[in-house]
Image 1: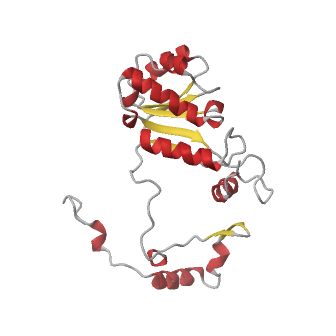
Image 2: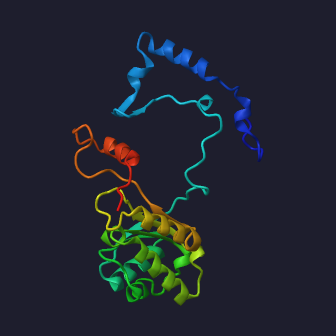
Image 3: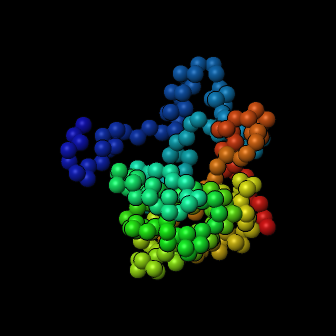
Length: 228
C-alpha cells in the first residue's frame, strides 16, 4: 500500500464488507455460542453490543465535537494560593507544559485571577479548571476569565480549555436546567474554545451494587440531569 501520496484514500484498497457477511464470520468463529452472550448488560434498559457496523446507520453519526481534540502536556496546579500557583504555573510552562489544570477550592474573583495569571499569556495555553470552585459555580470561573481577558486586552474567543463541571454528579452547586442552558449559551458566544460539561462516574456503588467503576461511568452517562 502506497502511503506517500497526499490526499490518497487508503481505505479504497480494501473492499467493503457488509454487516451480514461479518455476522456470518462471527457466527462461524463463535461456533454454537450466540452473539448476544457477549452483550454488556449495564441495566435493564441499557445494553451495549460488542459489534457495530456502518450498515446500522442510515447516515454516519455526527462527532461529539465539531473540532478534533488536541493533545496537551498538562500539569495539575493546586490554586489555593494564587501567588504560589502562579509561580508553579510559570515553572511548568518553562518546562514544556502546554496546558494547566487549576484546582480551585472556591469561586475565583478578579484579584485572584490577576495574581494567578500574572506574567502568563493565557491565550497561548490550555486553561483547565476543576475542584469545588468549578462544581459550585462554573459561571463565576468564566466571568473571571472574561474580566481577565479585558484587563490583558485579549479576546475571550482566543482562550481555550475546559471546566470540570458535572451537573449529574450530585456535588454540583447549581443543577437547574435553565442555569445550564444559559451558561452554555453564554459560553458558546464568549468562550467557543471551552468545553463546559463533563460526565464522570457516579459516587458510591454501581447500579448493580458491585462497585464497578466502569459500570458507574456508563450509568452516569445515561442518567438524566437533576432538575432544580
